[in-house]
Length: 558
Image 1 (cartoon, helix red, strand yellow):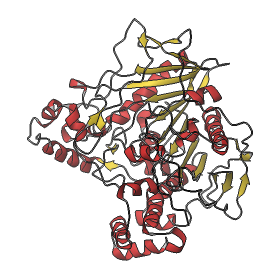
Image 2 (cartoon, rainbow, N blue to C red):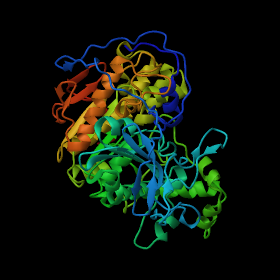
Image 3 (cartoon, rainbow, N blue to C red):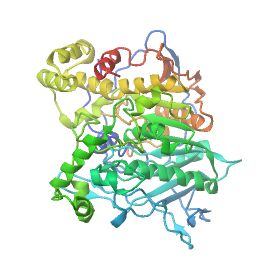
Image 4 (cartoon, rainbow, N blue to C red):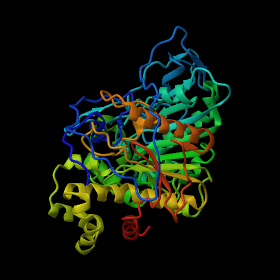
């Protein structure tokens, strides 16, 4: 049974605000909290697992600071020259425009390349995030003019460097390209890191019958944010060589909504050839995305709520609504769910996404590229922090909602006995972890593994200074080598971060993460469930999700 903890630290605050919209890597802001009230309990590795202690004798230097050098770096893009910042061993370019501002007549249109420029653009500070709600009382933050990206490149390379394009999380309604700072990855591994923004909420994912019919040859709607990501990938293809990167060796990676976006791009014909490897972290890839008809119906209701319910003229009315009102309004979804009609997100529109990703994976339709994917062992803890205490009766109410039947809810509850999982809140956290993350991840990995190499992991490091367990997106700061603000890595955490950073970089370079902590990372085999566990030590294990996923997969008809 997991130990009880009592306080919110910076990483938890970030995850609560946006479900990975500020995952703890450098660049995001967070509030400092007191230290935890005691150490976490040590967990024994599963029987038959293999463990390698992490070498903490030479921990990586994890400094997120950026210093201006004597000679600012510069690069020529297809749109014009840019000048950036000289970082210790890194050239950083922050706020490069990769699209025309999606405002005015370009609102709810496919993104367009920016107008060219002649004088160097000063790329020394990150652009504002895409417009998003910032509170419960209609406050918003960011800008509708937000399609910019950040590039972190090694100052010197022996040849074209591998490229990682990172998509931020935030439930498709929050987050920022400035959240993750790729300087440490670039400096320590020689990888070029690109972090683009993409339109969020209604501005990025509104589906509407008028939008689906507006552009001849482009049926469907609801995927403007995904199209932004595609244009960013095309920018990388056309420009990354000027920053020392290899346009033929691109890894598309992301966490939470960003990871789910990677899942969508694997299934989208419009993303073919733009990346050669994929990384999905804490992404419910096996869950179904919205279908077009219900997404359009939700869009009609959204328009009516804003006073734009009359036909004709509904679309022109919406385009006249101030952007901040669009960002503050509309479906917010349920705290403990993903993918419902009330959520913003990608849509199976018959164009950008012709079918559900899981169906495409099973048919072997994506390019046969290597995939690295996984989740954390306590994904549900951060969601529970939003709802507080949970009674046994409330647990059954949630389970009835999830399963559709009181009898099936009782069956589900029996899979999470209190003597093993603790009180009702911890049992519900485990349900959410399995139902929304572990089991969809297993389903997607199983489908992909029939056609291409898959490397699966579980992040289980339980930080004694944090109030919860290995929560949603808590692995990101380890991959980026940038600890949460106010919580510097200790020797064990620095060694864990180095192991993960190097594994992700090796995968980006070759499609194989190689040796991790002295152990070879096995490819995922659905019959054994082989995977790597990142905890205080690196462990190879088997049976990923086997305790409950057969039940949840059967219920979801996966």
